[in-house]
Amino acid sequence: MSFPPKTDREAILRTALEIVETQGWAALSMRELARKLGLRASSLYHHFPDRNAIEEALGAKAASSLLLALKSSSTGLKGKEKLQALSIAYVEFASHSPALYHLIAAAPSSSDTHPEAKALWNLLLDSVSELTKQTDDTAAVVALWAFLHGYVALEAAGKFGPSGAKGGLDRGLSALLTGLTKKQNIL
Image (cartoon, rainbow, N blue to C red; front, side, top):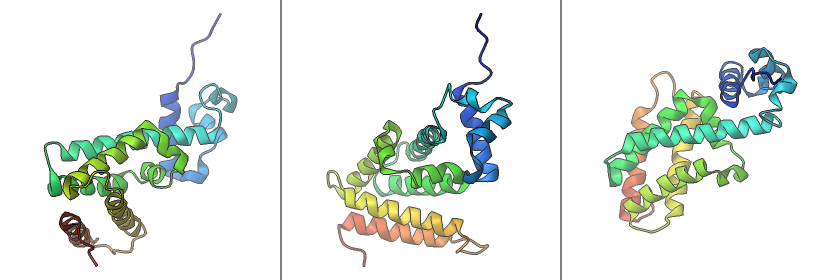
């Protein structure tokens, strides 16, 4: 006679994310996860071989969530307006979901082969290429990503003070997108 499972992959991932968001990445372990779920740690191995597999699955969920946020923010937009909307959605996602953002930003290059990560990259690549009129404008995507990630990292570290730096984001993004439009170096 088989017994119904006491948990599933989604419950494990939800609980893992809850641990990370409330206690940080160092607190995530198979034992802590099992404790929170009211299971033995060995039960988790039916769903995930190790902690790395849980992180990888969370990374895929993070990429899917960010992709959805970016697509939702830019529906019906084109050119510079589309990239502005994508950029603001990126920063908002990072601010509101720092644990998930960490998985995207700090993901090892092997995770770049996941369909979710590729879809994110392709959305940005297509949007930037539409603006620059250059097919496969990887350098421009990297410049945009570096700018956004830098802004997010500085904001998360509290470098902008209590008033924030919204004006800095707007001004830097405007300069970057104007430079990409004119196909000139900004500096």
